[in-house]
Length: 81
Image (cartoon, rainbow, N blue to C red):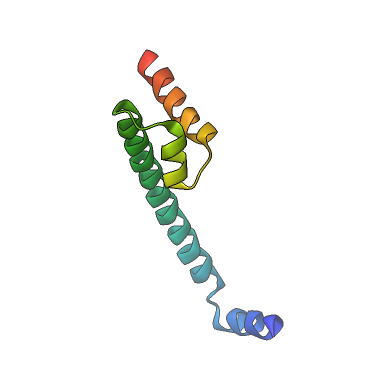
């Protein structure tokens, strides 16, 4: 089945177009992911600085407390530079 699809794409001459589209989509998603990570980190720092424990933040985010502490430590390093 995959071979037939690939053969059809080759016949259509659209593989280059498909790769360009996928590359653009991947780059767009990378930018969105970066924005979402920045937003998450901002919320983590806000919550932590307002008295919410790292454990509670981690539970709410569905991540480990180590990840929360990593975000906090990274922010402290960035402030020092």
